[in-house]
Amino acid sequence: MNQSLSLNYTVTPPAATLAMPTQVLSLQPEQRAVASSANPWLARLITFGGSLALTLAASYQMQVVLPLTVIEATPWGLSSPLTMTLLWLLLGLFTVTFGWVALTAMAAVAGFVTARDQRLAHPEAPLRGNTVLLMPVYNEDPTRVCASLAAMAEDLDRLGQARHFEVFVVSDSDRPEIWPAETAAIRHLQEELSDTMPVWYRRRDKNSARKAGNIRDFINNWGNRYDYMVVLDADSLIAGDSLTTLVREMDADTKLGILQTLPRLIGGETLYARLQQFANAIYGPVFARGLSAWQGDDGNYWGHNAIIRVRAFAESAGLPTMGGPRPFGGEIRSHDFVEAALIRRAGWTVRMITDLPGSWEECPPTLLDAAVRDRRWAQGNVQHLGVLPAKGLRWPSRAHMVMGVMNYVTSPLWLASVLVGLILYFRINLQPADGSVGLNSAMFGAGQMFDSSRMIALIA
Image 1: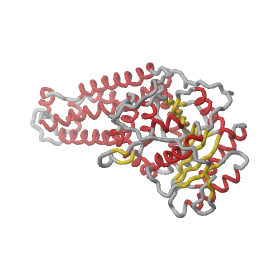
Image 2: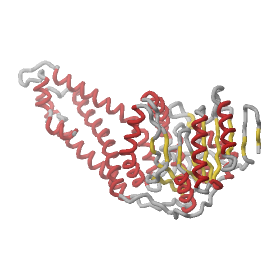
Image 3: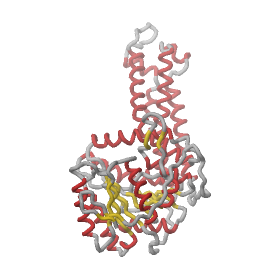
Image 4: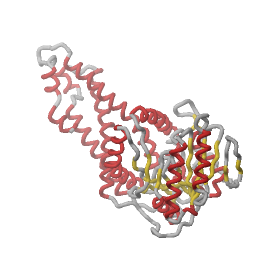
């Protein structure tokens, strides 16, 4: 055991090194036979087939509404190349944005009609794997972090399962007002849990490669000590019953690389946070169940509140540095999607468990805080466009990345739709009247040109 009582306080177990080679995206890796224990094809048919059918139907109706040919547009004086281009652009924007809404809606429908989550483990099976509760931190509130870890450890002790778990805090904190308090909080946690489970602590001097680099450093030094790691965020909390269920599922399914839980939002004190909690509680489970149904064993990973097979992660998920300028080049920022895709590429399964209670996280307290976080996520998700051509990725893994990009692209597309519609409105109603029709009347021109009843039905 390495222990220093200076401000660079570190308490770590003996080295148990595990190589984590950097993956080459341009090469097809040697892989296990691609495992699959779920049958997601009905859910995929509902989700993608249903959304395609809805989108085609809506696009056709919009095409009927708009005067898209010269013959239709000429009586209204709209046959100029610019106006025709705007009309077709409006149709294209409508089709893409409607398709995105339809995909989300049909995924929820798939969640209603498909089977519940797959469970392989017996609920009372003894735990076999050695599991670490891994808490990567970077200038977080140490009191909150240690309180969550203490609660999880004590809940496991209540169940008589604490001996199968260890706590490991891997810190990259570098702010002088944070890390001394962090050190003191860790010492207190170690004393509090001295009779419950080991609490290890390591702090790096530099936040190289961010969270992904922090976890990679942990695996390189101590990965061979553990069978599984439950990756946590600073605001994560998982009940003891849920932790033992996750371990049992990993024990029972030797092909399982990642099992992602559905965290519920808690702890909101502001109006914004409480509204987010309400939305998460009402329609979050429905959408998540649909997502789980269509992705099957080709699932995704959200970077926290998930259990991971350490060997699978080490063998398959070493992230490369992307070439080229930002936002595509440099370290992969939204690492979780890519790690899940690489693990699946290597033949391990990645699943989601949506009906497991007792997995929680917090949300940003204000819209501004959420915007700061989303800006970081947006850059990371756009960077995934450079990962899409990687050899050997499963198509659902690519779909997850495209959807991540669309989460941020659809907003400017909606804005563009509004702007194009406004430009068309003014071109229609502010052009000089030619005496044949009253195009200079806003009440008359737009209402005559577009089938308003059909358009209202379409939008509604």
